[in-house]
Length: 176
Length: 116
Image (cartoon, rainbow over all chains, first blue to last red):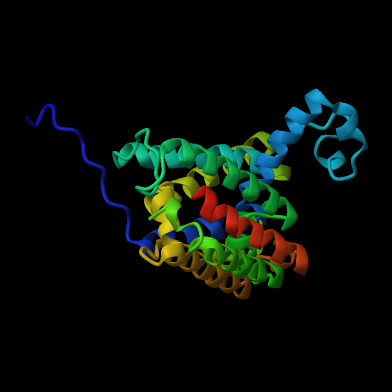
């Protein structure tokens, strides 16, 4: 019995413990690099990398894209790109050691998997668009800017939660 | 000893100038590993847990995020006061008020729709 028993997933850490560790990691990022944490910027750079292969002329002439991929500049030649790769490794490692690795579709009981996947894609598009609009995501703008007391970052954080709570009731079928 | 060293060479460290790009990028990756690990142990790898924040059935997102921000804030300003961190060289996100509000609202909607 014990030989075939499936390893059960370990419970998550206490949120205040996880939050404290997160704060220490964020501080270390500032202490070592002068920058906080970020995730949307590097994903943007990965897209610019592909864009640069398909339409280099566009990248070379668009003011927003020139610093990232203009001329011979490689959009992936950036510390945050490696930080993002690290996030994937770290998350996977933790999932592995806590028996939480699995292929599952997290959703409410009233929708199908396909609906959930479609919504995940749509939500991802909005997150990407919003993050570029706000010059950062919940990591780069929210956590990092929040910790160094940037006014704009706190306004951004409030707007994220206002937007989410504003539509949560309408979209309750997705999750409850 | 450690204190004198920190005060003599306050952060942020010019890692790229000191050790070259490869070491700098590797350290950035290690910071990312620690970030991903702490997010996962907090439950941020599970969309249902994140979405539950918006139905007030699980307050993990608030607890982890704001604990993280406050702890980092205290450490950053404490280290600056002790001269261990040169706040003048720390990146502080410039404020773009309306783009922040509009982008934030769009992201909030995306958060509930997408679950992450």
